Length: 121
Image (cartoon, rainbow, N blue to C red):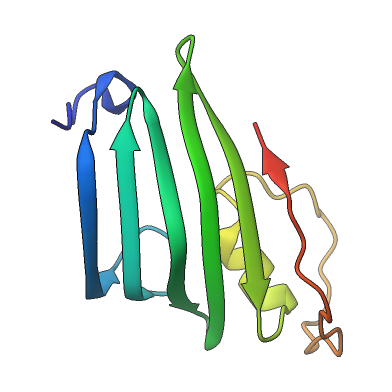
């Protein structure tokens, strides 16, 4: 059950899997969830490797979202075919831009060779 007025009070039990989910208006570019599988129990969501397309980049995401003590914790693995400044900016929450100088956008030449495991709080 999702409490839309207080989403952190929501609960999820069971398994949800699918493909072809399109999310608009969450970030500047549409998110295309090609395939996903989520298993929920005891205030925890376990995300099996799921394919997400954002800013023309394919991401494979898996990990755990946990709801403890009124807070959400994220332990996620994200693998990408490429990362660039446009993708990182699209994922950044609105109003959280610490860069006050104007910079000309240039495509990144950085290509990750191994998976990174960021832990968000």
